[in-house]
Image (cartoon, rainbow, N blue to C red):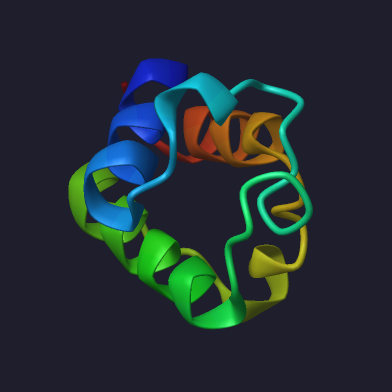
Length: 76
């Protein structure tokens, strides 16, 4: 799951692959703004065929948070 999230960040949001670690913070370390975070949520919903509620988006602080959430929600 980490590799799939990393691929989305690198290919779709132009994040440096060397910066993508489980502990990297989306905003502070990767410089992702609120619009890019919304894009990431939409991309994850499409790629993993899940729905992410607005209430859950605030839980996405680190890449690890995203990976754990997606792992729990998807059947991959």
